[in-house]
Image (cartoon, rainbow, N blue to C red):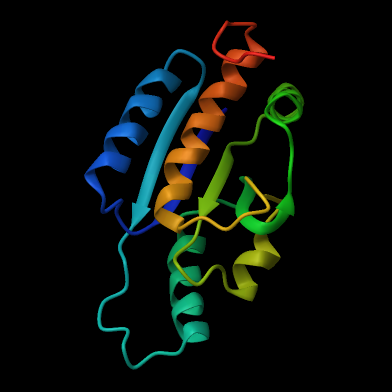
Length: 157
């Protein structure tokens, strides 16, 4: 089993990338992890938001295998406390051999085709964050979940 993080575009802010790299480096102690960045679309000024979502969706879907468990990070997704999410993730890992692909879309969200392919959706908060910032927040929460699963002292109750 592997966890993949599928992203639209590169992380532009250096401070966010540094944080992401820190947590990605820590992941190797818990699970096989891969971050996949699909290129941002070029020359989109003439495209509508829906057209952008469709084109990004096509690129995202090319990276997803039929057997993958796909989890969209989306404001309409299920919210968990950190402990509850760690327990949920632990159950998913224990009862499945499929790779888990977490997907963070572009600034406009996901196309209907991507929503149709998703197995579930996860929301990190009732608040809205930029798709760039969500990358770091998600990586920290993923790391936190594994420390909770392993009973390590990172998370405090």
